[in-house]
Each structure stands twice: as C-alpha cells, then as structure tokens.
Length: 282
Image (cartoon, rainbow, N blue to C red):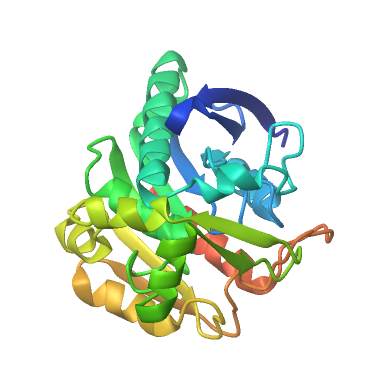
C-alpha cells in the first residue's frame, strides 16, 4: 500500500514556522484525521514517529505530525536543537496556540479534500504534548476525540520552587540538561511568568474535568519520566475516559532516537493498535 506524504509550513506563535507532515493513502471513503503533538525536548521526526505515522496511514487514517514553533529545531536541521534561543522563549501558551493553529489549518485543508473527514479530527499528544492536547481539546469544537500517550497531568508541579525559583527570577534564565544530546537547554523566566499570568487557561485538571469528547489515556507501567500514577489521576478526573496501561513500557513505549529498526517494538505497536481502534469508533 502506497503511503502519500504532503508537507506544509505555516506560521505559529511569534510568526515562527510550524512544519507539518501529513501521511495518508488514497481512499474512496472519507478518512478520520489524527493530529500528533510531540513532547518536551522532542520534535516530529523523533524516533519512530514517522513509522507510526505510516502505520496509521495504512490503517486508513490521515496522520498529521508537526513541530511546535519554539521547540528548538529548525527547518534546515529538523532533528537537531540548533535554535536554543527559540527553545528558551517557548511556553505553554505558545504551544496551545500552535496546536490550535495546526488544528484549524488541517480542518480547512480537509474541507478541500474529498477523502479527509474534517468532522472526525482526533488529537494525540505524547508526554508534555499530551498535556497540551488536553488543554487544546477542552476548548476547540473541531476536536472530536483525544488520545494521550504518557501525558503530564499538570503544568504547574514541575516548576522550580523556593530558592530555585528565586534564583531563576534573578538570573532570568535556568538550564536543564538534555540527557540524550548533553546540551544545556535554556528556559527564560518568561516561561514561569506566562504560566502565572494564564494559569486559569493552562490548568490541565480543569480542562480534563470539562471534556465531553471520547478520551483514551495510555501509559506505560515502567514510565521513568511521568509516573503511571499521573495517568490514573487523569482518568479519575474524567470517568468517561478510557484508560489502558501497557506492560513493560517506558516513557516512549520501548522506542528511542534514532529508531533504525524496520518495525515497531511490541509495546509501541500495542499503543498504535489501540489508538487506531479508538479513532475508528469516534
């Protein structure tokens, strides 16, 4: 089965580019659409995301993956953090804005296609992208379904406190080590200021409780970055959500970057299969 790919670049927060890849097959019947958001220190070409996109497309789903405008990679170097200034200028509000901008773009694009169903848009988010997906889904009527993979449950709890917060404010910048690349990733204090200013709009619990669309929560029982307890809490906030734990799966469900194998590991295949089934029942 031939996988088709069309790529686009649109403008996101601060008029910075958002590259978008769409994966699909040709079908006589309208196909549901899945829009995927990467996580913290991630990007659309990370690990097995492209292979997952193709698997979704083979199942008859239009799969869309994109980069947040301030994730630190560039159009010319899509897998390297070459723009650390942009990374430091990122914040949650910009990511939610980017997500909604992409949703609107895909919605309008789908109306031009005879076989893309703009009325069946499901958004998927991994890790921090999962938190952004919850926030976006709660306030976007174009979204008809939500899937979160290893999602965070709070935008607030990972913020520095006490002495560390004061030091961040005084210096205007703090650094977080990227364990994979060994880069010191900057975060300007505006990140915290934006969160405080927009805390009502960036409250994941509030958004989770308000959701009235189908929601599938998937988490690995050996997640080393976001505890499986967080997924249990998300589920408790919305009893209508579906909750599934993948056994022996870590934060990226046994994938890594770069991903060079020609197949998905069993843990990620389980995530993909369950996600496909969920999307087709929207």
